[in-house]
Image (cartoon, rainbow, N blue to C red):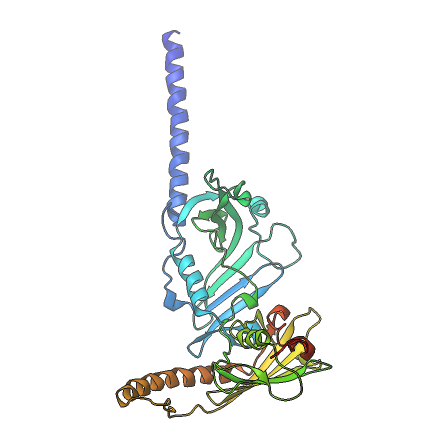
Length: 376
């Protein structure tokens, strides 16, 4: 290589190096301007106390959670109280989650990452829209949650982990152009189904004294017991109640739960099964179970009665034990009255209850009997 060729080669290196350096500083400037630094929070300048509305929407469902009268509520469920722990958990994650990757992705490639906002006529590549707003309804941030980022985990033996485990999420924040980030959390709790957000605590009929069922055909019976730990028996009619049947019916109230809140009055138009429950705390529950086309039931209830303000002393109770038991009873009574107040407030709604949790209440009387050939 002669001197002239060497000089031309050096000049080419300088020119190419300058172009590369210029592109590097251009990308670095754009990266800094975006605020999406690796390891930095996805969202800045937003506090938990700023958020009073959370909207989540995909191609099928939508939920709006609103902080109203000091309570988070599910707008699509008639303002039913929402699960505060679930809402706060998601908001905290959104505000704390860290960026692990950031790059410019053209709009034409957004469908590949499921980053197309739901709505309109678009059907492919849709993501989940998440919006946070302040108490005045002013939007704080809007983003589309896209494809879940998977991470290989060769130590995980589960079959569904062969392609990796959820480790992050692609996100497109509105107003940040074509910049797509990956955050260090799959944000799987961002579910747009209203039923997933309602508070799941339910009424609790305990210390039951009498249960009466009025329905069609043989599903009509009443059972009772004389004391809380006593043996269940039929309140009227012939035959002997099988001990297992009474215990199962009583226990069914402990696990009673609902899957959703019903706001459509059409779901309550069928012929209901009626349950009446009296407790040793002098409370009365009237429960209506209306069958649904799905096989589940719409449950409505009313609770009435006033627990006794004073405790009934136990037989042969010692004087030195009375003070302690009176204090325990006063504390129990306070908790009970608070529970009943909450139950009465939520009795205005109807609930969707799985049929399998109600099967013991639907037993015909004939299945509850001790066979006639079995001696007492």
